[in-house]
Length: 336
Image (cartoon, rainbow, N blue to C red):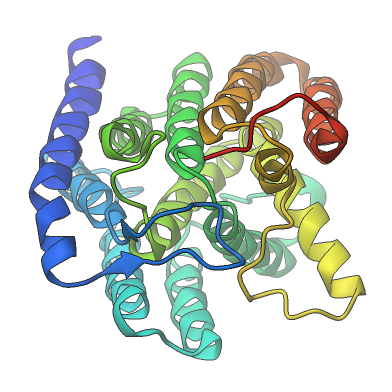
C-alpha cells in the first residue's frame, strides 16, 4: 500500500532535481538572471526561473496519475491551468508582462475547474449555497496563487512551503480516507518541491521565479480546495496558515498606505527577519518548523474541527511577532 506513495514522492524528487541540474546552465545561457536591487533579499546575480524544473516534474507526475488512475479529480482542466500559467509566467520571467494580463490568465485557470466541479462538492460545506460557494472558493484560490508568489522572497521559503503543504495534504488525506489520487498528487508536489530545494536552499544556486511560484500556488490551491470539498475545510485552512497570514497582513498594511500591492517589496515579516540579521536558512527553517506544527494541527482537525484551527493560530502569530521584532535584535551578523 505504501509503495505507490513512496514512488510518487521519489520519482517527482528525482525528476525535479535532475531537471534543475540540466536547467541551471541554460538559465545562464539565456540570461534569465535576477540582479540585486533595493527590493531584493539577495546580494549577487542569480538565475531566475529554476521553478520550471519543479513544475515539469509536477506535470509529469499528475499526468501519469490521470492516465493510470482515471480519477475525475485529476481532470485535464487543472493540468491545462498549470501549463497555461507556466507559459504566461515564463514569459513574465523573461520579458515582463502587465499585471492585468497575468491576473486574467489566473482567473481563467481558476474559473474553469470550479465550473466543472460536481455540484454536491461544496468547498465551504453547508455554510454557503452553490454559487456563493464557488465565487468565494475562486477568490480564495486566486489570492492563494498570488500570495504564494509574493512570499517567494528568500532562499528556500517557497519550496519549503510547497513541500510542507504537499506532505500535510497527503497525511490528512490518508487519515481522512480521501481517494488515493489526491494523496498521490500531493506527494508529487511535495517531492518536486524537495527536488527543487536541492538547488534553492541557501545559498541558492537558482531562484524559483514566477514560472515556479505561480503554477505551484495554483496546484496546491486546487488540492486544498479538493480537501475542503471532501468535507475537511479546517485542515485545508490550517496547512498554509503561515503563508496566508504573513502575506495577508503585509498586503493589507500596504493597501491601507495606498501603495501598489502588486509591486515587489521587502516588507513581509520573514523579509524583516532577514533584514534584522537572521540568515535565509534560519528564517526558512523556522517557517518549516511552524509548518510541521501546522501539519500536526491539520491532522488533528480531521476530528477536532475549528478547535484545531484556533490552536494553530497561536504558533503562527508567535512566529510573526518574532519576525516583526527582528530589527530590534542586536549581535546578529548581517544576513547574506
